[in-house]
Image (cartoon, rainbow, N blue to C red; front, side, top):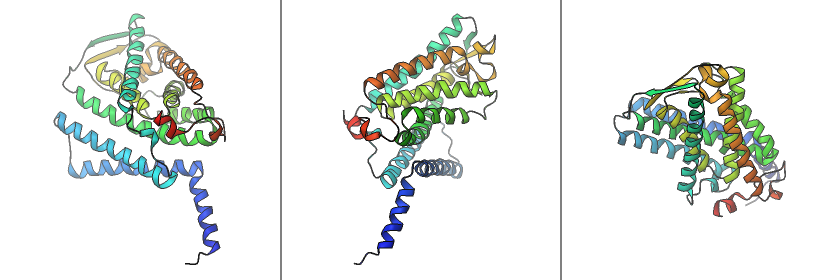
Length: 303
């Protein structure tokens, strides 16, 4: 079979275009959005509403499986590599560590606000809807981790290095929270800096996605399901109900405790510690020098 040299050139140019970082970010983001829309369409057509723990668990498993399958397919078709960051070895302990870290940090924030006399914690809706909030937090945790750290941060880091990718992700994380009630330039910047840096630090430290998923899940679940506070402007009633008063720098105002100076300090300090540990592991990537940074995702996953 004779191969035309022009076909090789065109294919080579097209493949280089596909492999360009911004192109890959767009392709992966579109694939993720299509998957989410498809899942929402199926739920609307079937009029599915979970009425039991089994129904909710089944819906969550299907949703998470679809999201991960999309990500794995993207890596295989576009980046031509296995999803080492989703390897099952150590997945359970890494998810548990992230869950404990996220839940622990938020409990620490609430404890400090309570001791400062800013937070008042009362009885809420009880345990009846707790499982539904947990499933929702888990789905959101997978979705947010895939987009911000499986796609945006990871791909940007390969070309621009860890610190530039961190800055990009902080901006993206803040922009994603601009539509919530009570959002202000200060609250947007605060959430972007503290949460964007904390979750990035967890990913860089492990070079895998299970611990960030656990952290995302626990943060949202403890905030909504346990303490019943406003999460980025969206109020849920959980086992408890938390009310805040005082200056907005301590109470968070309409945006909730996520944007308080206490949350900012706790999250940034945790991020600094994790980044220092990541530096000791030689997990920091320099711009355009991935192969020299000692980062091999498959080797990290297998270690």
